[in-house]
Length: 481
View 1 (cartoon, rainbow, N blue to C red):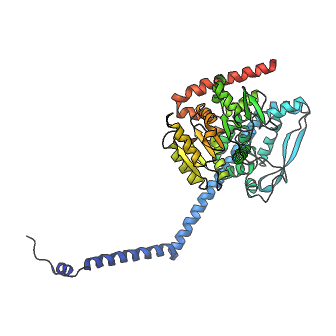
View 2: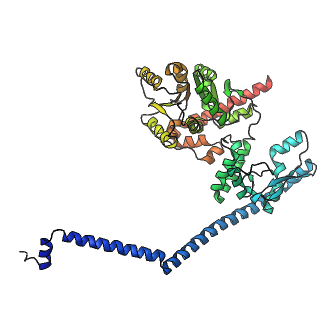
């Protein structure tokens, strides 16, 4: 049996809230002690001294990391350029002999805007000069500039004096580092994904520059060189395997779609890649829809290679996945609304969320999944027409999406409708996009295969081989005609 309460207990019981007051006093003392300790740690003589020591070591560690990285990058420049000059010396001597033994010095602006002369071979006129230029052997003497420290193996392109406006903030950033023989912009131009500007590409490189990244760019330079130079004076419309292709850059495609959205006519926009070309070869209706579309845009490295083999250079890889965010940015804050149609249930909702987070000024007038029955189709079309959307994105996959748009465009009431394939899967987060380095070397298709090998092996390995065969056959026919 418990004994009688002790005096303290009796008093506590008789005084309501006393225990609570004691607890509050303890908490106050604890916070006061914590505050005093924090103030002592930060502002006492010992505390200030400790903070200065920590800042010194932190700053010294950071400078050590930065300087070590610069030394390693410089060591890599010296070793690779020296080895390349030794190994390629016979080629350089031969090229110098063919060029008449003349060197060319071109004024360039280096790091901190320090001028220097970039070395190259003086090319002879005629076919011989074009051959040497195409191989890039005329640029080999610039390896001497790398040894001198005037250039680096990787970096922004060496610009001529006065070429870039000093008032442009992005242009000024490029002078923080040495110019390079290989630049991200050079690689992206050859892979036909140079969607932005050279200054933006340089700024992106400078902000993320690392030794590992430089080695990756050097490795990507070889396949990029195989793609050839960027398309210059290419035709506005080209014919590839019986398909009419509007040969536009990404920015031109966005401007053209905006113009179509403001016109009185209803327009269909289509993307064509190697797989689409294979399907169109067998499907007459699909081929007719692609050729009748207001805009038919080249999508993928396959179309780039086909254009090169057939003598009609493709200016840029204008795929829907890269065009979509640029188009959203262009219509943000306007009354041009979007309707999202296709993919599995829940995917279009996730794409709408992406738009809301990244382009909140874009009006999404409606969404609907692509798993509707023929009986439900009239109601889906009515929903699109009543939404008031100007742009309809259809993600059914080829050829169904383009055939559906060709058949129902007038009923939907939209100004522009386009089939976008797997775009919804990427922007919903269901499927990751290939990293940039794979896109730069034209291997995005292989990344796609790795994600779904069971579904994609036939399309890419069998289909790409068939597509290449048809392109080569077309080239041989054109040569004999």
